[in-house]
Amino acid sequence: MAKTRNVLGVLVLAAVAAAAPPTAQALELLAPDAECSLATGHLVVIGKDAKPPAGQGSLEWSGGTATLSAWLGRFSGVADLSAGPQEAKILFGGETLSLRLVVAPEVPGNLYTYHPKVLTEECAACHDPNDPPGPGSNVAKACYGCHTPYTARSSVHTPVAQGLCSACHDPHGSRNAAFLRWKPEVVCTACHNRPITKDHEKVKDDALCSECHDPHGSNRRSHLKRR
Ligand code: HEC
Ligand code: HEC
Ligand code: HEC
Ligand code: HEC
Ligand code: HEC
Image (cartoon, rainbow, N blue to C red):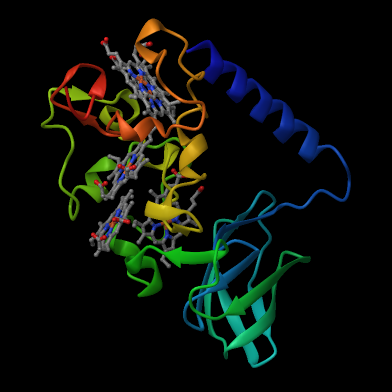
């Protein structure tokens, strides 16, 4: 897993670099993406601030203004946007974060889909909204309340066994299928090198790993789907 450590090293360096300039953006948007399309006008913003301010923030769009609930540097708020291109602004802790959204169904490639429980603002279905888990937490218990556990399989993929669902999924939503953090072609290579063993001689460069491997695990060795 040397590749994993390298990736983490790069991320740490990137985080340090990002914190260095005085103009650094401390607001981090967790949902939705800053530029995306939404199938309905119901906007749910979730984010956090590396430098938590005192007081409240607001969400502004052409149709109105809403107060952001803010707690311990985290914030969330909702707006109902009308159809078409929409600009919205998050104002929090003296900082501004601009959103460029398009409310229209089926915009290819850029459609952001919320996890259904986020869209209905049932935050507590997954975690205490006042005390959400941070990155790298074991969150499987919350997910298995509704999704069938993968742990009964004889060969469970290590990050799944560790409950690190958000290593691959963005639990609040994403622009990729199955709320994946990345396009399916690169989800596996975030941690693995493209395989070079003889077992993989016949794997085409553009083959999806999940054509053969189940990303969560299976009852066969190497989490293979069949054989
Ligand atoms: C489908 C499950 C799910 C729902 C529903 C959900 N969350 Fe989360 N949330 C998570 C998980 C899992 C994490 C941990 C993220 C990670 O590992 O990066 C998280 C993390 C967060 C964080 C970041 C915490 C931190 O310190 O990094 C905030 C803020 C947050 N959620 C707010 C909300 C709000 C507000 C709602 C409702 C509008 C909500 N969440 C609904 C699963 C959910
Ligand atoms: C309160 C019930 C509930 C909880 C808790 C929950 N989900 Fe879901 N999830 C749903 C529903 C309902 C859907 C939409 C129907 C479906 O595809 O199963 C869904 C859909 C999904 C999908 C997309 C499925 C697909 O076929 O595209 C993923 C991925 C997912 N959830 C991951 C998670 C993760 C990760 C967690 C824990 C952080 C979680 N869910 C917690 C109810 C829940
Ligand atoms: C190593 C990456 C990875 C991890 C970790 C992971 N998933 Fe997935 N998940 C995927 C991929 C990729 C898909 C897309 C389905 C496919 O390609 O077969 C998926 C699909 C899903 C789906 C859609 C239905 C299905 O079973 O295919 C649900 C629900 C889901 N994951 C929940 C979870 C939960 C809950 C966890 C944590 C216990 C988790 N995932 C951890 C990669 C991952
Ligand atoms: C968050 C990091 C991470 C991601 C993303 C990830 N893996 Fe893994 N994977 C691991 C770890 C950790 C192990 C266990 C150590 C090892 O064997 O390298 C592992 C092991 C494996 C194994 C070896 C199983 C065995 O025992 O023979 C396979 C196969 C595998 N992963 C496939 C995948 C596929 C397919 C994807 C994409 C859907 C994926 N991995 C994404 C971390 C990850
Ligand atoms: C055409 C089917 C196929 C595809 C596509 C495929 N694999 Fe495999 N993979 C296998 C087979 C077969 C094995 C061998 C299992 C054994 O002999 O134990 C294996 C074994 C592995 C192993 C464990 C042994 C090793 O070489 O370290 C890992 C890790 C792995 N694959 C990762 C991946 C990743 C990552 C991708 C996508 C880039 C991928 N595989 C794509 C069929 C495939």
